[in-house]
Image (spheres, rainbow, N blue to C red):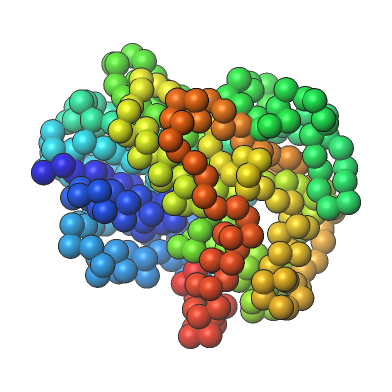
Length: 361
């Protein structure tokens, strides 16, 4: 019996990971206590996704446990022991806006929770593979000091710049404003790297751009494309904060991300770090995303512009994928932004018709 532990298993990336590894023949152990509801309210609850996983997958076992609770997590690890071949740590407080409202909880979930998961991995299944979903926010606002050019619908990096194809892992994480969320994720990111280097463990850190897909319970504070599409479908007002709506994000579909994690699992490395996202293949500005939502839905977006820039927000982020593609040349991105939005629309339009704007998206 091969076991994969997935934290945040009812969330976007967690649930995609559960299904992916179950399809590969693993018994999957999910850990998720629906803190997303605590962070963002009832609309963001992942209970619907947990129920769907339990109904669909006989090989899935769910634990309503808190990753900060060492005793509870240790019991789960101890139950499966060396049968655990993979730990995919997706659970997090994911919003840099929310983190400022409760820095203590943000840090304990993101940093302490990762330490608990990592130390138990070392104690119980050190021959396995530990994968951590980090964030591009570990680079703070350093990307905002790149030479950018303002175009009609987006900002773009100057032609010929070394990161024209995307920002790589050599960008410094020091001397920059991270947001408190960014700081807590830096702590977790470095802990996972250090366990790999110090103890010789197979650990991989994936610094994601915008992670998205139809299973995203998008909210105002987290889940850009999912929440944007929901607002367009329902007519709910969407707020654009700063940079004229021209700030650029790369967006990677949950399937493409989890497929990259699988490639790492099959050929793991020690303490490796990757920037991962849609790269040049799948990115858009806020303004471009609104245009796409309007085109797909046939409705006008109800939005309001606020000139106040969000603290720690990136003006332009496109992930450089060269390192990962060189290490894992068989991995390819399959979703671009239009395809992602069309898929989100097909899921959300039915949910909205059934249950209103607060539906399970």
